[in-house]
Length: 331
Image (cartoon, rainbow, N blue to C red; front, side):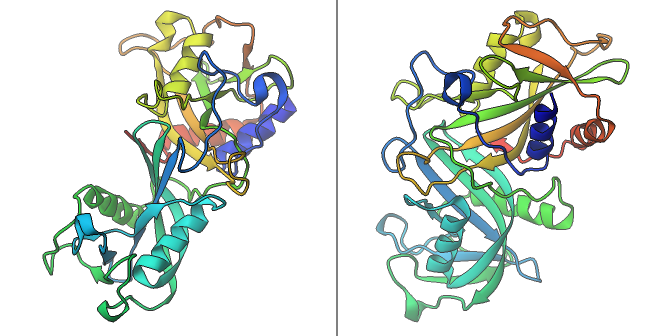
């Protein structure tokens, strides 16, 4: 199980881990039909959005040039293009719409309307360039400015950016999780790798592994992208995987905690446009029930519990769980 320990350590550190081609093509759970490959601008849309703060904690905003929201203000954001990485797309949008170059600090949140529409929200810091002025207005934006969120009173394109500004200010004041940036690793479809942890009453720790068709590894669930499945939430694959391996009374006690990392490459359109979200979850007893010494039996022989014997790795897992130190998924 040494390989599983290395994978858990890498995923826990936000570094990502290559998807295994063994077994079911890199995944251990999928919809009834084989998962469709993600294709940008066809069946999948990724949005990048950046919150930049200056030394006064003012927020960088830009004025829209699009006809439907002309003159309104928003955070720099836009669609990813084929062959782009997530960070590359974010930098491009910030420069096109504000005139500034930037460096990402961390992924702040992932917002989704199902696996076919996903927005990546970054905290970033300026590294160069000059603010776009009205004299430089183009089809991307009219101008950009730093805003203290009070004066002047700006007409916003939508108020959904206000909690994102607050999230960025909170992270700047007191980071809620380690810096997380996308790992450049290919994934053909939209899916989730699951780090499911069970803490026993005696202090032992177990992690769920997939053991069918190859070396033991953290289980991976693929999400469907067919029209009938696009309305489902992003984490539906995780819940499908849990139903497959856990007995019914235990399924409800599995709690998704958040994201540990994101994997995407995107340099081969149609082949690696997908994203793998590394998700942390825990099995928890219902309130009022005493903790159990060992994890529940599993429904499928394709999965097994792995007892974490390495003290350093166990401490890292417990620290992240106790601090609830994860990137939030917002639906």
